[in-house]
Length: 202
Image (cartoon, rainbow, N blue to C red; front, side, top):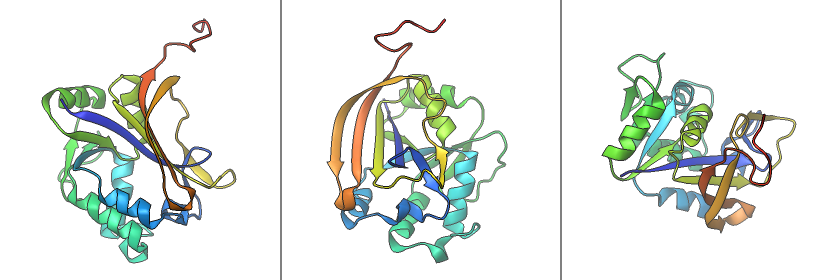
């Protein structure tokens, strides 16, 4: 059976990006970039919005494409281009132009449930906040990993990650500190029907 990882990088206040900030908020450290390069082979899962953004970075089709990327960002985009990617969308059309990307129609939760049963190895979301939220709600997520960058983007933050999430209990299974104060925390998630000390909502 395959394992499913939801994987986010965030500001301390839970934003996925910030207007005017570079990738990794400009704070990636050599040991963090080295750790990224050591990750096991993975099949990435994403929605249409993330696909358009990341494929645009890879091919130069959006502002901030490869000619404007710093070395650490460029290496990450190159690795993504080589990895297998499954794109869940009812709006994109085949053939997808980003290398190693396959379009998946229909219900994403049902498709991922079948993939977990039929495959081995690691499946991981890439951004795709609504897809990640749906997979977590369905109880399909085995590992929930967050890399926290030491910055608060209260004035410029975009894409609040946890809005619309259910209540989730998190059992820590791993943690690490990288240079510059970057914190990695990894959990085993358990979706709650109601807070453990409170009554279920009326």
